[in-house]
Image (cartoon, rainbow, N blue to C red; front, top):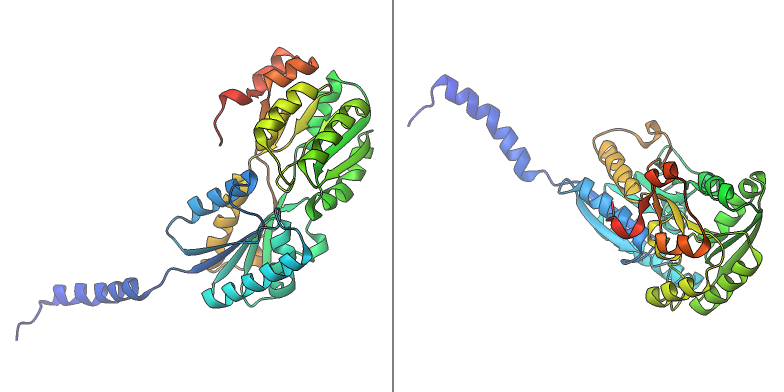
Length: 326
């Protein structure tokens, strides 16, 4: 029988436990509930930031609620049941949810107090209605640079009639309620044009150009039968008033955009998830808000409404046709 020298034996005794642990230790399981569907720009950016940050450090399972295309209560109940069954089967160590519906349908009713810790992102402006955060759940709110956008445009286009043209969804109805005091505090008289389909969107766009001084386009993901190319042609033909947005995927239809960088939400959620998996309690992690923005302008549409920014402002804004997604 051959014996190892003392130094070799010590080394072997040190290495063997590490080798065994490395072979048997399973990567932590993270279950991600996406409120929407693949192909919706802002949601895709969140997921990309999340996946890139988590990389190969966890086992990641993704579930889409698809609530933009299917906001019906019966459908959401069914998808919630399917999500819960998938969670039970996967047995995750942590949950991540993006945007309001995933928080409302899954996190709040089933995981507010455990047993699985959770992180949310993309919840618009406030999470008070969901009773969050809790000792088990923390997250990042999504806030938009609306005040600055309105301030910039008002210097060029005085007037207080503001039209908000968007999809008719729970998230946008929530935004209308939450943001109405802000609009009025800034001296605007808001009108909410929330539509179900593309034909209604076009009709209300024409109406807004006739009756409003400024038009805000938040999103279009739940507008049925939406057609990007047709919308571009339509807006070029019908635009009369300055149109702005806070989401980069709406820039083809807007003059100006101080836009959120949605990827930030996914990166923060993933980083926070890794901290919790490393032993930190969600209760120790304060509620956050996104801070990164991007300034873009659409020169073609700007020319059509007579928006010519000052040289100083032009230095800040990127031409939407010349930039790549962040």
